Image (cartoon, rainbow, N blue to C red; front, side, top):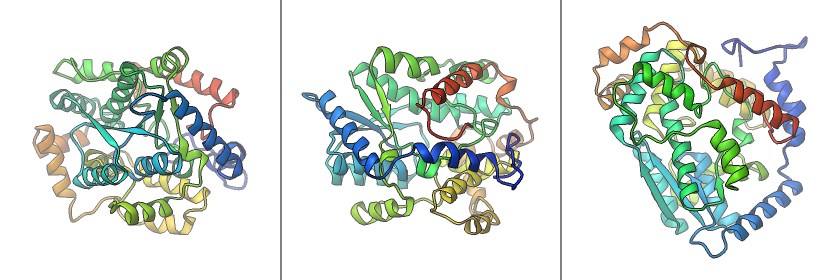
Length: 366
């Protein structure tokens, strides 16, 4: 990490707060050995009891990426659960992602439920975020994923949602100025009101209070991260998925979405100077899955492929129904941040402070 994270702080030895927070706060509270095994067994027992007599005992949000793919395998094979695999199609699935989902579903003999987001509304909302000038233009896609899964769980009486979020590959968090909270419905609506054209009639909207307070404490719906209680090593997981299921890897984390690939490899570094590989590699370094020297060597390479980026830009422009010139014009807009629009940032900050104080939040403070 470097000073493209404007809030980074280095101590007298030149070590940044990302690393210091990991070793002082995350690592001591992260259990993957025997204690983690006990946590995982207890988690599985509780999930099975809550789902007894039902067609499935939990739902797993699956994108086709490595984290959600390995989680799907682990839930069925290692935890003995009966998950319903839940996929949200926001219109940007790569063919590799589609293939990966199908292969795991077929070979694990699981049921798949796919929710398709209204494309006209998604398209309009994404264009609104482009026009707003902010960096976090992937929010419409991520927000739809969360909101749709929570809505499904509420409607069908599901008590447990499993996600592939994990400390092994995500313990260093993206600075908020790079990627603002995707679940902030107030900001999403404000940006759409100012720059959108089409009303959001069916687009699913969630809120921090609904899924952090109402769902867990009133409806009893838990969101769990089983990968945090097991030894989850990225390269080992990749090798297992490839051997067992014919799973295909991606050039980079999150590239199962064509839009996210464009956004993280080209838009963010080119327009704002934010290279998410710094965050991803930093997580792998502190968890001993990558050396700092290897990371620096990778960062010397462009985050996108110069030979194909023109095609990617053309694909995104065509998909959004605009010209390449219009898409490129958004690159020149004045830089804006989440602070330029209405938000619920104070609620997020307060909630994070309370959760850390109660020992419910393990991970960096970004």
